Length: 428
Image (cartoon, rainbow, N blue to C red; front, side):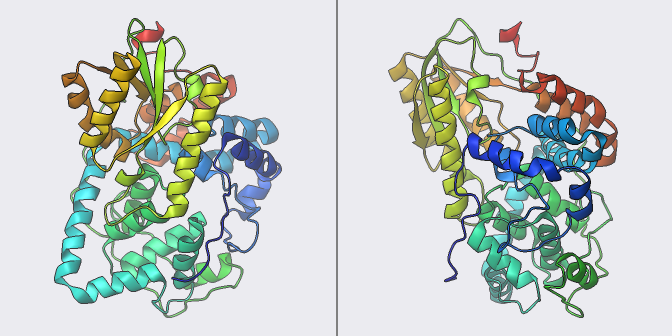
């Protein structure tokens, strides 16, 4: 595709995230509730939505501080915005307690890719959909907008997924992988589970149907795929997910052991995570190559992740911490070897990192643990109270989770959400 890239998010930093939050706050109340579903296109500044998701994805700003700011500005009028931020935390908590769903998705993508080799016609259809050459009004625009900007309005994401699955009859897991490769805010939980939701696999038996009238109305008349869509889809059917597992618990740090700090793309606030430790060094771990299955991550998304890591590393130094060396490798085995070498060079006896989010980060860390232990290194994780609390509430569906939002809002307003979970023994 020869279309030029359109940099909607030129800077991946906490300062840029806070600036965007400050600019959006006046509209986070009644205006957001009224206008949030309208997709007015990438060529205009989207004042009706926050566009904070890339900064939240990398936790350059946190869900809790965004909620606290919105409620502080608008009170109960911010309820709809708080609920939408709550969805992100719900998805993360839900997947954290059912990590097998992510593993099954990855295995399914590999199976779907093998199916494309056996079915050239299906492979051509997938290629046409990714490139925006289907002839479906709206869908082709969104495919090209995604490639150019690394971003889509949430409503457009739902329409796109529904058309991909039910009109084009393409494998849903390949569509989810496309988003993981191209979205700047690609989050394993929000992305995988939203695609499952559209397909009718999350709220089982309830598929999301993209309808031409809905698209025409909420794109302010830009698109009208009348007669082109399957508007009465049958939900997909797969084995149900496992029941909720336990709430995540951190692997306690040992304050007696000198530590090598590991920064990841999941948490860009290292200055709030690593107090109370003897820090001998730090590394910035690039996990982008593990994010998707069907191909490499697009450069806008990869560049934002690198920028977020660099910004986190700079703030760690500003807070009195060590400079973080960039570390990347194509396999978990190679990453482990590098971390072991770096820890030994720094004289560290433990490796400490933010508690990995469900998805590719948790997958990689699970593979690192036995290798680090074999090298005599202790691995510890730091879990925030917000993540423990939201995972505790993600035992069932979102509407039950929503009933538990008031105490979560109070936690955000109190400032305690940024603190480490009390189950971290090193903090007792």
